[in-house]
Length: 293
Image (cartoon, rainbow, N blue to C red; front, side):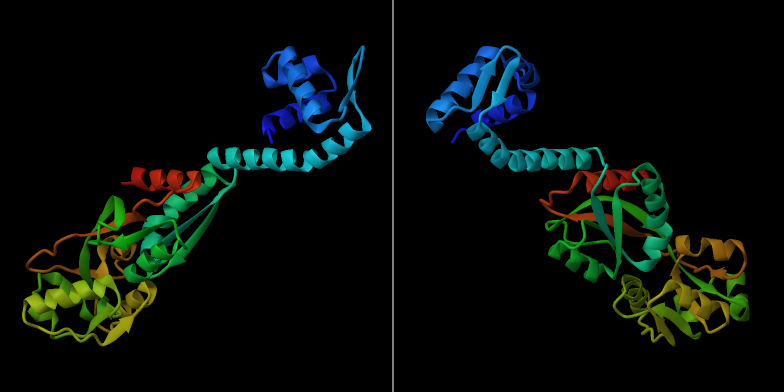
C-alpha cells in the first residue's frame, strides 16, 4: 500500500481540481494525474469524474474518501500537537525539589516561566534527595534539584546553586551571635535540625563527628518554616541554609551564630537521568534554570 498515492487522492478530493491539488502539494499536475490513474488501476475502480471545471468523486471515490478522512485528520492533528509542543503552546514539565529549595530557588523561576509560556503545565513534587532520585529513575519527574554529590555516571548535572549552612537563634539565645562560637560550644545548647533522612542533617552529623562529638537534636522536623519558628521562640540553635533564611536575618527575627571556622559551601545540582529524552518544554525550563545561575 502506497500512502503517498492515498494522500494525493485525499487532497485532490478536497480541492476538486488537479491543478489546485498539485499547487498545494508542490508537485506537477501530470504527477497528480498519473498517481490517481495508478491508484484507480490498482483498485480496479473509477475514483473521479473529470469535467471542464475540475473533478468530482464517484460513489466509490466518495466511499474511499470517507474512510481515509478520519485517518488523515488524525495525522494532521498529531502534527499540529507536535508543532505546538515544539513552540511551547502545550506540554508539561514535572520538577522535583525539597520544600525549601522549591520555595527559595524554584518558585521565582516557575513564576517567570509561567508568564512567558502560560500554556505549559508545570508540576511540582517535593521530597528528599534520595526520594527525588527515585522519582527520576521511575520517570515520574523530568528533572530535580538535589543536594550534591550524586552518581554522575547515572545522572547528568546541568548546573549547580551554591548554598551556605549556618546556625541561627532567636532572642533567647541571642548572646551566642555576639562573637564566634565553636562546634564544641554549640554542643552545650539545644540543637534544632531537619530529620535524619535530610542531606542537611547528614552534613550536621559530619560537622559534629569531626570534633568527636555526637549531635542529638532536641527538635527534628521536616519543614523549614517549623524549624525557624522553633528557633524564633527560643527552643534552641537551628542548623539552616543561610540563603533560605536571609529575610528573617535582615528583619532581625533571627540572628546568625558565626563559627570560629567557616563552613564549606554546599551545592544543589539541577539533575536529569542520563540519556533522558526531554520534551521541548522540559528543555526550555532547564535552560531557564541554568540562566538563573
